[in-house]
Amino acid sequence: MQSAVLALTLLAGFLLVVWYQKGQIDSSYEKRALSVAQTVASTSSLVHAVEAGDPGGVVQEMAQKVWRATGASFVVVTNSKGIRYSHPNPQLVGKPVYDDPEPASSEPFRTGQPWVGIQTGTLGPTARGKVPIFGPGHKLIGEVSVGIPVAQVRDYLASEIPTLAAYMFAALALGAALSLLLTKKLKRQTLGLELDAITGLFREREAMLHGIHEGVLGLDTHNRVRLVNDQARSMLGLPPDYLGRPLTDLLPRGRLADVILGRVEGPDQLVLVEHRVIVANRMPVQTERGGHLGWVVTFQDRTEPEGLMRELDAMLGLTEALRAQSHEFSNRLHTIVGLVELGRYEEAIAFVTAVSAARNGMAEQLLEKVVDPMPWWWPYCWLRHRSLSSTASNYGLDPMRAWGVALSTSETS
Image (tube, rainbow, N blue to C red; front, side, top):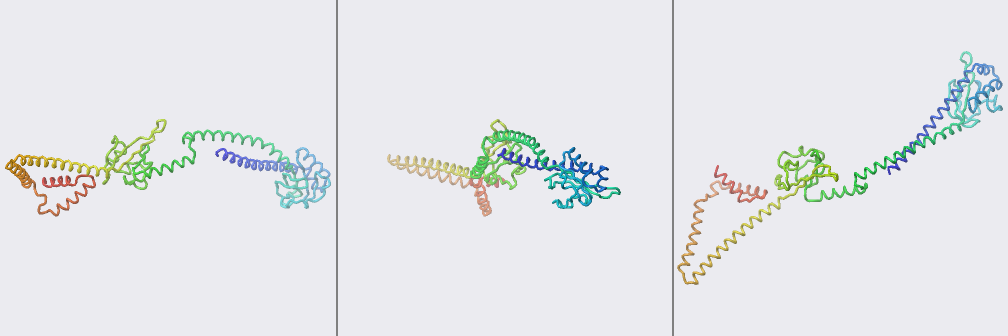
C-alpha cells in the first residue's frame, strides 16, 4: 500500500514536472525568438529598408540570412499596415497578414509593444517573438516576427523526459526501499499483527477490562493513569478527566495511594475505601526484552466475603458453645440417672439442688456485679446502639462487641 501511494505520488509529480518543464521550455524558446526579433528590429539597414517601402529585396535577403543563422522557422517583417516585406514563402511577400487567425492585439505594428506566445500561422504552430520597428522620431513603421517551430520545443522536451523519468524511478526505488524498512520495523513493533488484528485485540481488551468484576488500574513509569476500567473507577472514585493525570493528583494521601504507588509492598494489601474492604495487588509490566513500561494494580472488593466470614466465625463459636453445654448437660443427666438406678435418691436430690443453687448463685453474682447498661437515659443509649450496630455491620465487625467497647468508654468517662 505504501509503495502504491508512493508510485501514484511520483507519477503525479512527474506529470507536474513535465508540465512545468514544458512551460519553461516554451518560455525559453519564446524569449529566444523575442531576442532574435529585437536584434533584427534594431538593425539600421532594416529600418531604412522598411522606411523606404520596398517589399522583398533587401529585407527578404536580411530575413533569410537571420533565420538560416539562428535556426528559426521564419523571420517576417511587416510595415505599419501589416504588409509582409519578408516571408519564407516568397509568394506571400507583399500581402497583408490580416487573413491570419491571430488576434490583432498580438501585432506590435498596431500596439507598439513587444509580444511573445505560441501561435499557429501558415507555417504551423510556432513559439513567436514580435518586436515593433521604430523609425526616425520614434515613429512606428512596422514589426519583426520571429518563429521557432513547436516541434523543436517538443523534441527538446522529449529529450529531457528520460532524464526526468530516471530521477523519478530512482526516487521510487529509494522510497520503496525505505518503505520496506519501515514496514519491517513496524512489524517488529506490532509483533507481526496487521491493522485489523490490532483493532480486534483492542476491542477484545476493552470488552474484557470492562466486563470483569475486579478493578484494573494501569500506570506508566511516571505514575500517570493510562488505563482504568469501570470497576476501578467506581472503587477509587476517580474524576472523569483521569486519563493521563498523575495519580497523586487524583487520590488523597493515605494507605490507598501508598499501596498503589508501591510505597507499601507485598501481595494482597488490605485497603479500606469508605465502606468497602479492598484487596490490592501491584504488578510491574515489562516487555519481552526486559524493558519497564509501568504497573498494573488490581482491586478486589472483599467487603461481602469478609462480613460472611465474620458471621461464619460467630456461628461456629455459638455452635461450639452449644455443643459444650449439651455435653455438660448430658453428663449431669447421666449422673442423676446413675444415682437413681443405685437407689441413692437423697444424693440425686442433693446433686440437683446443688446444680440449681450454683446456677442461681451465678445469676445473682452477674446481677450484682454487672452494671445495668440502660440507666435513665436509655433512649439515648438505644439510639446510639442502633447507630453503632449499623456502622459495625458495614465494616464487618461484631455489633455486640462494638457496643461493649462503647459502653466501657462511656463508663470510663
